[in-house]
Length: 406
Figure 1 (cartoon, rainbow, N blue to C red):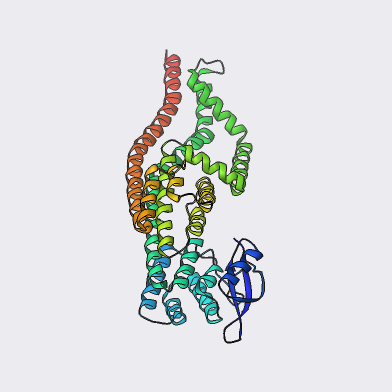
Figure 2 (figure 1 turned 90 degrees about the horizontal axis):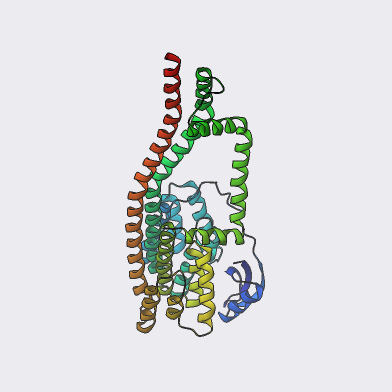
């Protein structure tokens, strides 16, 4: 969403400046005037960091962000002024990049910007969900409570990602070793063995079909190694560029959702992320429509985001959110039913947190079971490839050696 900078007349008659996010300039004006802001001028802001600060290339880790969020919440809760809290935290952090970001945010706050608008200049560090929750906390006067919620949410999201990466690390390593070993054998070992077999049995020697296939594959790869490498790199580059387009990313995410086993994991992760993020936003006082828009961008899947956009349109036309979620293709019926209960009781945030906890446990259980199945499969696959190569090589050599000895 574009960001707009504006100048306005404060209650004491002074000219002040600020930043806001909106779909277009007209929408920004409507929002500001609805808040009673006397806008003097407004224009689209360029997405750049404060000129006073040059940001290093290093990224901010999850741990640094969680510690920063919790400590900022504690200091604000204790009554420490925001600029002083930020200045203290910038001195404490060991991450040089994060230190510069906090200093830039502090400078913008001292210049009159709200905390959320100052953080919005650093989208690489603070996500859209993070910024919108901070903005809601500032508007409602509950910034310390919102920051505590944010720290918990960031930790939960990080733990889930770490669980998935840890479960997939071993299979990926085995698969990588298998591929590298196969190419190494085909390019460097099989040509020498093929020469030995030819020397022993001559060019007209009768070889098993699988040995001929292995030698033919080796010859093709050796003769076209450069072409294969170039084609492989080209495919990766084209694929990466394609999935960066809106259409390509949508189709790729749809493919992932339709994959057996992994599609269910991705769907459950998205549901858990939706539930926790939506609960946090509703607890912060964000409107349902705005919460749906922000949450859609946070789930990390374009297909589910599109589905949430369609749900938001239906809700805007007066349809109950719980009913729409019950009819959604990628949300289990229980999510819609729990949402309906939350709407009836006024406890959407509390109920959705329970839903998020449930699906996070589901994801952990599925990942553990998948990992326990994938590991032996990968080991068997690696052993089968090695065994096939060994049989293709040693069998003919042994047979030809006997013929020569006879």
